[in-house]
Image (cartoon, rainbow, N blue to C red; front, side, top):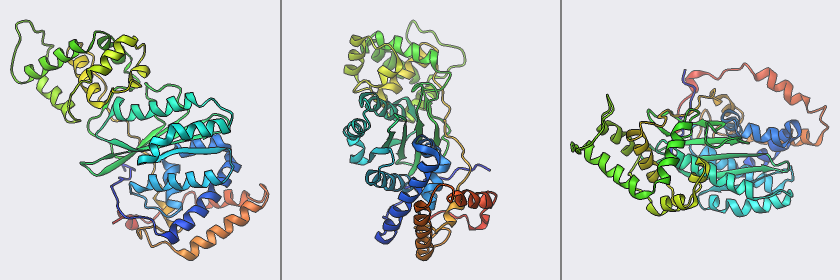
Length: 382
């Protein structure tokens, strides 16, 4: 069993009556989660795609929709802005994502933290998932979670316009940003993905940095030569590695988009003497197209190919949590307002009690742990 839910593009919006209940339930779950696991424990769970999706299902959102990310994060951000639990959220969908640096500065100052490392991290993880790791998805949602102890998590989402599918990228307190840095990636695995941050990419990254240090003119000549060779032209002096078909390799890169160099960015990189892959990725103007062109040259001219393995993970399907109150789009059944209100009332009373009395929640979890949803009821959301 593949155990991966597709996240297709869904339109529409959350009705007001449901949004009101979502806000209340989200707040209560966050209070209980922080009380049980601490702020770091909450961030660890938000960076787990299974837990995140279960949270989404619990509050009544679709189990297989791109909106499961944007709505859930929006509800969490709103709840944490009103409740002082020692953790806040910066960023969000579209225009809100561009306010991340400003919001991170406010949050960091509130917690007496230096904001600059977190602002840099925010930029870097966005660059990794748009430039260093390419599978045809364009980021449109970026949320940065920061707690008072300095722990952080990122949940960001990209959309493949052609396939009308989304994938969600989860990060948590990464020690490295250039070698298998993700906590998890939720979505459908692509046949090919340009992955320059795989764990075996050290030699590729080093060779790419060496190429950048030689300047944009050399890179441009190499790219044009490769394109000409792929069309059948053979220069007088040309070394052709055994079993290499330039046409196939070029087509692989072009399937992800155009190969166009930003000469200004590469010249800037050379002038700065960029020393590592992180610094290169953070350069303004270094986008997906430029990295594709650089990677093509590194693969064909220097015989050091990047990884083409997609890093999507395969979490267990959390569909059973849609049975808590129902689903917004009536899957597996319409949201039951009475049940939803009873759940909110129960949790409100629970929050008011001491920790010993809250053990009842853990007992309920044990009872339902092995419950399986009826497979015939698992149908895609309309």
